[in-house]
Length: 255
Length: 223
Image 1 (cartoon, chains in turn purple, brown):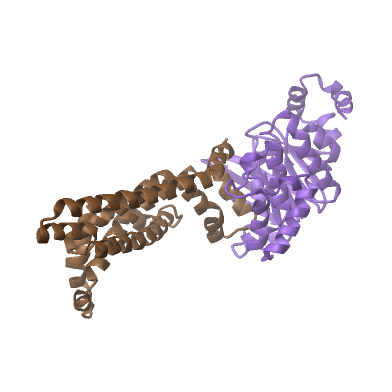
Image 2 (image 1 turned 180 degrees about the vertical axis):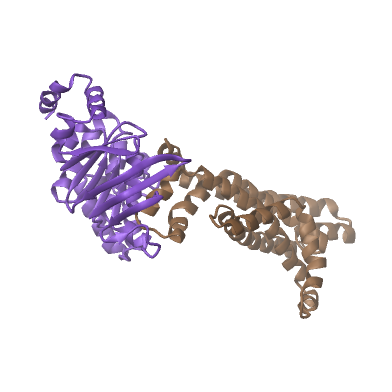
């Protein structure tokens, strides 16, 4: 579904993505983790070409991103993206936020788009808030509306860029629940997150990045419990505030 | 004469409000465009029209503009009975549009980057991004200075008396010189200006209240 071949990218002569090779299958859930500045968000943003790469190639659903003939608008319509700061349109109600792109890009009628949006709002548990403006919604509600907005385009791939980092701890779960159910429905998902619990529950593979490089790819236990790379070990022990060998038990208790 | 004056002032106000907002929006979009030549042209426009008095542009469109038009168009314009009004509209428009464009541009800069990214990532084209996401927010953020500017533009319609467009101030002056009833004419004109500016300001305040809910949320999504 998504394939990176030797992708490189630099900002101001600093390499932020180094020789990225990664293949993501249809229906797979990939979690990208690592310290800040590792290039996780940049990697995610190259998939819908919000950030272009300098060399190498990225192939998404058979479309070559470096090919100038690739229709970027069509590509982006197939890829949903959820942001750390939600980025809902503040001048539109929840329902209008969701119906905008399906109507303008997919050419749905107002009625069709509204029906679809209402179904999605119901799915994220916010149908009763359909006419609220973003400012009237809590952070968790805003993020759930943002997820519904992406889903309304019926994308083949969903990208999540630290979707819970800006939320109060109590509001994180309502967003994660939506993401878990999405993963169970077989959506192809790439998620940048520090929510290890979420990764353990639904991730097929975890990608650990540091300094623009992919250091390790493996199943959640591989990366969280038995990391091989010294940098991964160091990161995981600091994430859990405890020695590595206790991690497994600690996480089991959480669930 | 007074009634004609009110009519002409209203025509000038209505026409220039529409044209200067439209032209100002186009110039603002040019100035934030990624195409360099558009940016340069837009900046050039603002620097030329903002840094020369509005009265000059009204005189320019009345006296100079017809002379530099080719194919005898100028002669036709000069023969046109209402050309002073047309020249007044042109002069006020180019002047006010330069301010409008700068105000709107500041509004664009105030919109968080994530708004455009969200629009891009759902597949909206550039035109759609502007129409549905950016422009509505630009007008909302800049409403207070934009509203003030439009009231200013209303008052500037009185400059058209310089080219004998029969608007309200011109009418007042004329009544004064023909009948020496200056106090009466000026009083009526004053009341009319206050009344109309009051209506404009009330409309702006209503719009501000109407839009308040979204404007206040913009600072939040910037967080």
